[in-house]
Image (tube, rainbow over the protein chains, first blue to last red):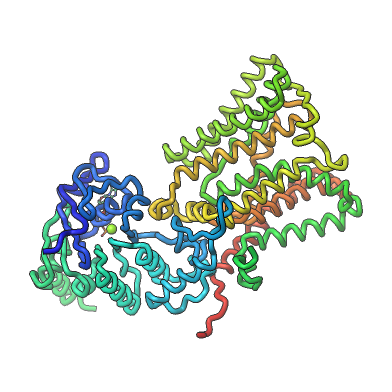
Length: 265
Length: 337
Ligand SMILES: Nc1ncnc2c1ncn2[C@@H]1O[C@H](COP(=O)(O)OP(=O)(O)OP(=O)(O)O)[C@@H](O)[C@H]1O
Ligand SMILES: [Mg+2]
């Protein structure tokens, strides 16, 4: 049995009086994809914000590679090798592709206090990284990010995380804005990262995407872990129901069908 | 640095925030050269607008950087007189060495900037409101303390030759030495924003503060630093004027608020942050100063200057918006290589 890279023990998180996460225990293994599933507002994004240093847990411990990890800031988390693509944002509309890619991690050249931002290196790496994701339309690192399509911007954010994610890669609904082909590229990137031994946490509302890449699934319902199982342990229908927050999707679908047949046209 | 700057092409020109302000400056300069005659373009004429531009420009650059980072500082309107009164009271009224007055004024600037920055970062109240508060608070403090200490609202100060040479003399009898300080400030800030890695942080913060923080940028420290720089720049302009004119007044600075904002916006900085350049701010400041002073060289009544500035501001904003849209959609070539 391999040892987990990242362990969460008894994690609670509340914002003032609002309890968002209760007693979450989770293990993430290197070279595996953990799919974090759940309804809207279940607390998935909040959980990964704890792992990326945006928020601190109210109680509970996070262990990274055997050592307790208390991230005071996102920089701490990224220094520890955790890279995250948050659900929204991550790119800067009026910055160039190269600059946006390297925000906070700027490549430098020159010496002493006169170190300058290495624009050429930044542009070259950024363009290559995005093209590796399958977005071959991007050739000019000086282009402004705001001129890209939503999916291209998403790909840029993912490319950045893949570039900097040394040991843990967290993707919060990375395929939500993407077309079929681009989504397939993201799934391929996830599998490539997994092959390199990186631990991937992948949040999605898409059952097909989850089943394609997931080795291990955790479902949050109203801030608590409702299920934790490995690939092949549950049927697709069971997973779908869990993703819908525990409701019977089959019933819901039947309801829609009968509504449609009663209201033709 | 030439190897790292983009090739001069239509696209790279469009992507420069200062392209619009350069055209604006050229238009304004042409207008006043035609209507202002040879006096406007003469060395004396140039001095009149360069002198105005210099002290305004030293403040406008850090204000512009704050705006690029998504913040605003209007408390500079009372930091200018606060800086000159501090220097004048310490070195004029009390007769301490001029260096003490200069350092004290700069420290006051740093302190006010620190308060501004901490309030903005800790309370998340919009910086316009925070600095509106400190604008009045600092004005009140300056007036109250000046009257309390000196009994008047105007203090004279006699600077020694070194201080005069550095901060308060006219080069060639007409150009204020502040012009050189402005050039130095522009080079310094230009390096910070466009060449140093920190420039990336400032642009990113204005673009999307949450994402910038998530990317590991110490957004709070950068914000506080920028507020300290703008307050200190205002104090610097205040003290150098006290040394230049040998006196300081309690109420001499409110005009800097709007003038600096106009210069920055004309210079192509996006009011909501994330976009702008130091060259643009410098050009915007020059444009403002030329309109402000150039009117005296034309046959028109000086009262029309405000009208021109108002129209200029609107035209500049529209033009900058257009250029920004074009820059966003511009791709060098769609053909597959
Ligand atoms: N900073 C905050 N302050 C107060 N409440 C918050 C905060 N952040 C999140 N919440 C609450 O926590 C709950 C979970 O939010 P979260 O964003 O983690 O959901 P999610 O599972 O990512 O949902 P989605 O699938 O829609 O992205 C929501 O009810 C939200 O209102
Ligand atoms: Mg979410």
